[in-house]
Image (cartoon, rainbow, N blue to C red; front, side):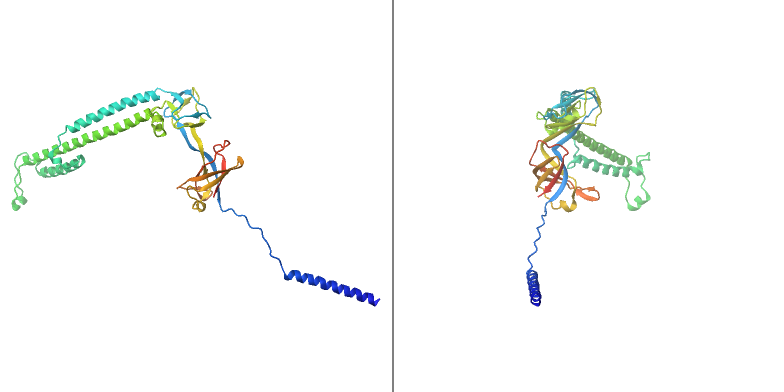
Length: 354
């Protein structure tokens, strides 16, 4: 019995030693603790909206009844296309505006010729040599004021001669004849009027030339065969019985109906050039924007076009700021180099600046 108990005790001691040995071995050689690396995104991400690269809102420059609407929303137009016409006694079509501009140009040319002829035939006094008309007026006014001051003591005298004053007698200075001072004053007035006339003739010629330049510009704009954007504003102002496309694009909004009255100044047509698209951000803070440069590559994703990523570059960074919920933010415009038929004006975009 004692032999069995002793055997059991020996076995238990051996087991305890084995377990202790295993525990000691494990604790004495701890393995390295491995933490998976954090995936960080070093790029700046901002939110924005999609816009066509170029668009404009057109308003009427005259009020009246809409007589024709030649396009509808979604139609493509070329530069110079008539979108709508207005019926108004005061407004002009392109043809009538061209005729009026040609008449104004002829009148302006005649005005320059007449003004130049009068100035060329003006006899500039020798007193004005080396002076401009303005300088001559200023100088003749100085001389006039001096002549008036010289004549002032004698203007109320009826006789021709003047008795010297006590001061003049003491100094030995004898006053001249009142007629001499009066003649000097009359001559000063004549020179002053002559200078003013010279200035008026010069000014008339300058105004005539300015009128000619404007008339020529209006005529050229109305005759522009390419209907370039540079001349679109003049055409819109002068040919104000018509609404014409200032550049090629798509009509995205058209608020004109035949027979309805339309008031001037109210935007009625929107033309957009969607040959390229831009994204304008709205939440780039002052801390982020300093790390962005023009030309910097970006990637863009749209909520409405899942699974696709579009490339682009920073086109411009606004100089001015706005406030957004207490933050100072700057608008950054991104020019997309990729396109998609599903793109629509106003879509929400997420821009990642590489």
